[in-house]
Length: 374
Image (cartoon, rainbow, N blue to C red; front, side):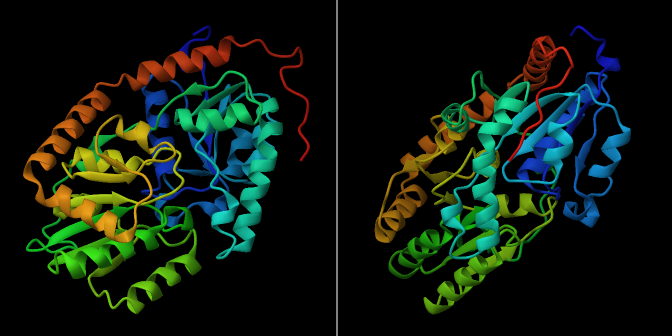
């Protein structure tokens, strides 16, 4: 880089910070990579959006005013109070796009959040004009940015850090049983995930194919409490005591769920990337996912992708992957190959090149862009 790495301050801004959250996890990995290159690097978020157990990882946004930055990376997936600080900073600005969930998914459950998502998408073109570089975590996301008016977009996939899954798993976990066929979902409990379709397919599998089966749904319901309650009611109406809503689990508890799972399934209809697919593959769990968004990129030719299937059709797919020994071996071999590729990824070199490119970009004479308006 033009400047000595030790003289650079590369900070990150997130809308909120919680342990186990994919964006928060990515911010920590990027911070540690920057520090490993000798840079000053911290993470900032609005104080009321940082969970109490994460205060040592993420600083209040107000503290950023006293910390000069050469580069500010804004993780963008929804509107946030950090935007004003970020966009009006004299630092070089990077938009790291994680995807904005279409507001329509949230309309029946949370009108306020749906409105925030609409605003985020409406503001995206103006934000793109204000930043010095644009990164996306998948080509799917990059295509959205180009459609919104971005010029050059660099694809920088979410970085997988296996260390959080390498700890010894707990001997048991609440929802899964070692003597049963265990199907697992890990991720936010949000309407775009279409977890009701997973529950419907599991109902068919449990009743018609394998009564000794359980479905564990692991993830925080804070993004959409009303949707979570709908799922609970739906499972109750179906009489499915074998559906276990585990809610949020601590990062150190998560490996136990992957270790106990026989199959990981994601029925989401909108994903920017989906890191749990990588986690499941790393833990040797066969993966089934819908063929949409950034999930095919995350799987990289591994796993089993499906397009639209009925509940009975998806249940039959569960059964085939679980019971067909030859197919299961083929799926797991492809997943191991994909994980080997991911583990060889030179993420620190990719990041260094991207940061060098940011610093090399010409800037206006006053060192900043014209102030953005909503």
